[in-house]
Length: 221
Image 1: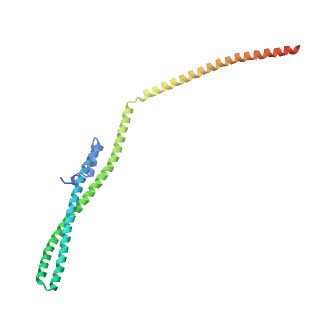
Image 2: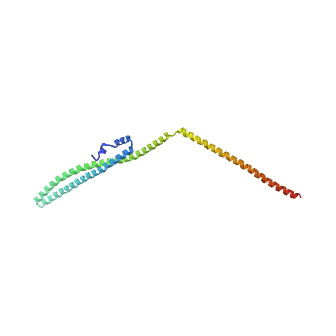
């Protein structure tokens, strides 16, 4: 299976369409995220291997290019020294090195192009995973809110508002009755206390009158 199969065969638009139709969209989103994360890990390994090939052929190309330059310089030195046989051998090795250099350059460019292509796909996969993660958080919040609303609606459906109102009216009437009884008992208490006070005052007035009468009688003598 291609390491970028989901990226190729299942775009985010298709994923969102499937998620919207799912019975549990959050659960399905989490499953897609797990699958894409596994693909991402495989893709990272493949890209790393491709980059290693790119670097390998680049190094081989640079080694042969350096050898070509070296053999050319040696051929010049050999001619200057009038050693034509040595110059000829240097030029032969230079030619063989040039052939290898061109082969390695072609392989390097081919593998670099493949590595660049994989890098782009890898970056796209990372962006898709990040976007799906962000959408997942928003989706989870919406699902939780919808579930809460559904629970409230269900509770309200089972509630008889008319009977609840009637019950509240009965409780208010009971409260008014208790308040009236309390007020009445307070009035009785006040009346009883007032009567006792009157008798106490009467007794007090009698003592004063008796004492006053005694004083008057004393000074009449």
